[in-house]
Image (cartoon, one colour):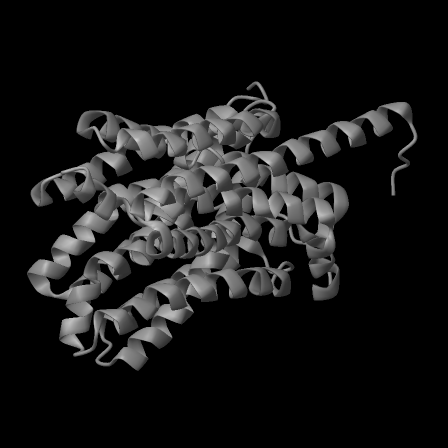
Length: 404
C-alpha cells in the first residue's frame, strides 16, 4: 500500500475521532439552545444562566493547556478512554442536577474533559495519518464540531422543548456511550508518550513563533464572532421575518460544512502561505456586509460567503502549531495541539466582546468593518509567520543554522 494512501483502518479512526468531536461539540454548544429552559426550570435569570456558557469557555481555555502539560506522559489510548468515561459521568450528573451550583460544577468539569479530549483527538489524527493526508484527517475531525452545530444542537434543543433540559443531557450521555464503544474498538495502542516536566512544556509558550501562531486563529475567530454574535439583530435589521431566522442560521451552519472541507484542501499544500490571502478575502467579505445589508438578497449571499470563510483557518493552524512545537520544543507537542482549541475560545470571547462594545457605542452595522479590521490583523500575523518560516528555511539551506 502506498504510504500516502488512507487505509480502511485510517478511515475507521478518522470517523471515530469525528464522532467523538461531534459528541463533545454537541455537549458544549447545546447549552445555548436550552438556556431559557434551564433558567425557568431552576428559577433564575437568563443572564445568570448565561454564565454556564462563559464558565465553560473560560475553564476550557485555562485548564486545557495545564492538564495537557501535566498528562503528556500518560498512555494516550487508556487516557482517552478514561476521559470519555468521565465525560459520560459528568453529563449524567448534569442531567440529574437540581440547582444552578450543581449544574455549574458539572459543566466546569465537563469543560476540562472536553478540552483535553479534543486536543488528544487532534494529536492522534496528526500522528497516525500519512504526512500528505494529515490535513484531510484533521479537517474531518474538526468537521465533527460543524455537524454538532448543524445537527446536534437543533436536536438537543428539540429534545429539551419536548422532554425538558435534563433529557438533553441524557442524550449527550448516551452519545458519549456510543463514542466510548467506537473508541474502545478503534483507537490504536502504542501511541507516542513524552516524558517532560511541566516547566519544559510551558517553555513552549514563551517562544515568540508559537505566540504569533497562537494569535492567528484567535484573531481569525475573533473577526468572525465580532459579526456572527450579532447576526440575528443584523438579519432583523435586513427585514428577515422572525420565522425565517432559524432556517437562515441552519443554512449558515450547513454552508460551514463546505468551509471545513475547503480548510482541509488549504492545509494540503503551503497552508500558511495560502492563509495570508484567505484572511484578506475574509476581511473583504466582512467589510462588504456594511454595504450589502441594505439589500436583503445581496445581504444573505454575503452572509453565506461569511460562513464559507469562517473556519478555513482551522486545519492549517492546528497542524502549524504542532509542527512548530516539533521544531522548537519536541516534548511539548501535546500542549501545542491544545492551543488551537484554546485560541478559538479566546477569539470567540474577544470577538463577541469587541462586537458588543462597538454595537453599543457606535451602532450595529459598524461590527462589520471592525470584524474586517481584525481579519486584516490575522493576515498580518500570517504574513509575518510565513516570512519567518522562509528565513529559517533559507538559513538551514545555507548551513548556518546548526541542529540542536
